[in-house]
Length: 224
Ligand SMILES: *Cc1c(COP(=O)(O)O)cnc(C)c1O
Image 1 (cartoon, rainbow, N blue to C red):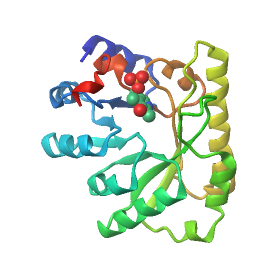
Image 2 (cartoon, rainbow, N blue to C red):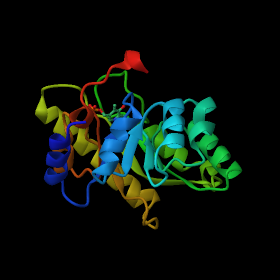
Image 3 (spheres, rainbow, N blue to C red):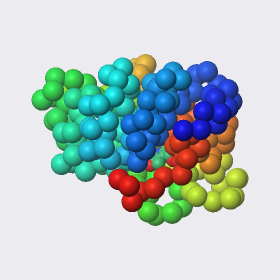
């Protein structure tokens, strides 16, 4: 890992913004190196990889799941996952709830929104999300706790566009808070910002940034 970059990022971000170090594809030794500098929140996007790392690494690590989650992989992460950032359908949320009930826990979840112009990114639209939140079936879920929202901005050099997309996510958060979660103190997270755009995300009110390559270097997916 790049210790200097890690310290620089930590020094730059406000103390109430959580840094999630995205360690996907990186060896356990890299996670440990960051752990030894005090980092406890790590993000992964592949359930099997997360399972193996969880088994081998210190148990006080808070593991965040940030990738597209297939329903048949939920079982690998439910017993210990700290926060799932990537709930993008009601079906997925129901399945997380079902598995969480089996393990007698309540699992924190963020609702992922589609804010980018690229249509390759997963996520709810506001309309789909409201439909879910207003449904009776949603009220029945006892083993998930919705703690906020997550989104990814377009990959573009147009800084104003990135600002606008993050601002949109913040507005979604405010609207959901007001209409559905005003009584829920734990609905407070806006997970936005990655290596190339986290300063913009913080300006737009991010509470949680997910930074990988700026800390651990470029990823080589062929090694997975
Ligand atoms: C990989 C990934 C990140 C981290 O990306 P970097 O550009 O390496 O910082 C953040 N969020 C999600 C959802 C990711 O999949």
